[in-house]
Length: 161
Image (cartoon, rainbow, N blue to C red; front, side, top):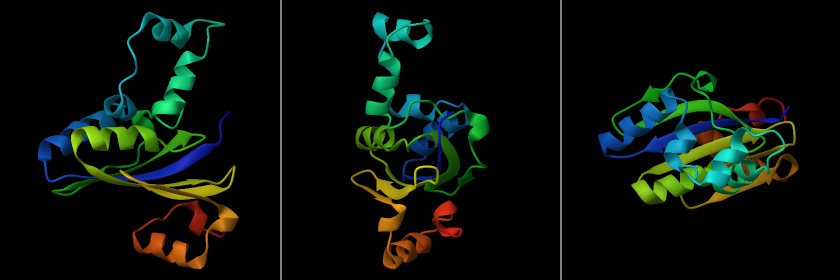
């Protein structure tokens, strides 16, 4: 079983079509595939389900998504939407999907903030379309905690750690 990374994502765009596209991807359990589609090579497809096959799919996903599994729709919290933002929480395996989101933000022209917290290993961070500030728990000072809290970061890192 993996360690689960708690995530809170905010996608921002003035374009309602971008928000609708990513809301549909979230609701359909295909957020990461929408952000960064998987390769369509025979070797990649064969590695997805073949017993004993090379873990090409896993290596590709970690390199391009930041995590090894797609996020199922039933793992998402309720979506909160405004005119220019979608906000949703979810868990991912081992690490946050920051790479997929950064790829999509550059390609599609939106911004995002992803707060994440992995209590099993003991790290947390804040990723955007251009940065990833990942820290081990013992490296998170009071100023950082306060700054993240001011932005609404309400995950486990602030519940007694």
